[in-house]
Image (cartoon, rainbow, N blue to C red; front, side, top):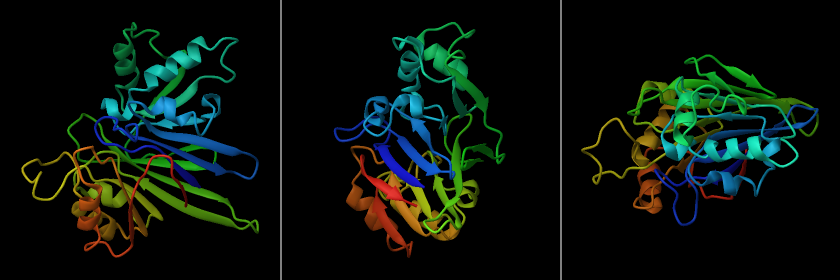
Amino acid sequence: MKLTIVGCTGSFPGPGSPASCYLLTANDGERTWKVVMDLGSGALGAIQRYTDLEDIDAIFLTHLHPDHCMDLCGLHVAVRWKPGGWGRGRIPVWGPAATADRMATAYGLELDPGMHEEFDFTNWAEREAVTVGPFTVTPFAVNHPVEEAYALRVEVVEPDKDGTLVSRTLTYSGDTDSCAGLEEAAKDADLFLCEAAFEEGRDDGIKDVHLTGKRAGEAAAAAGARRLLLTHIPVWTSQTTVMAEARPVFGGDVAVAVAGVHYTI
């Protein structure tokens, strides 16, 4: 499984990165599948550096804040108005129950048909897995001030170089503060892609919104994750600071996500 960091800046796009968007690719032995976790502000342009839009097999949204979903509006335009027609059917989109109506409202459409002609919307059911090609994705409810927010546990079984089937797990926190659901989603993950938008000391008075580097490290340690990749870092948060907070509490490898970088899991 390969992870491409399309966008990793928290809350809104920064000068070097769009907001949250992550491309995953894996092969099921017959073809390569591509799925997207979140499609935040500014991500639609950047993702075209790594894939044709028509090659996207599914989109998984963690929650409905604009920095995680708003570029679905632009993708709607691409599907609906491409000269000569869109080469595939509707794109499957999993997300919170309000996803279809929220996107239609954002674009100024009537709710019926809204964007249903371009996207096949399915609502998450907490801890009920869905399968797309080699990807099995399970949503875990987490601690963020919206009606529905999820961390996503992504598991892939794919053939190794010698043909042996190998299982790999990536967990993506979405946006959350510390909670049991986050730790359960990240249990024994090979890679834990975890937000760290806040800093210790600076943001202590804000609860149940975001993690600090320290709290991300604590969650990774409690979950037994193997690698920690910090992400969703806003322009006003220091990458150096959140890494320094995470390292004393997590014994594994710690790094900060960088837009355009690929990781093999």
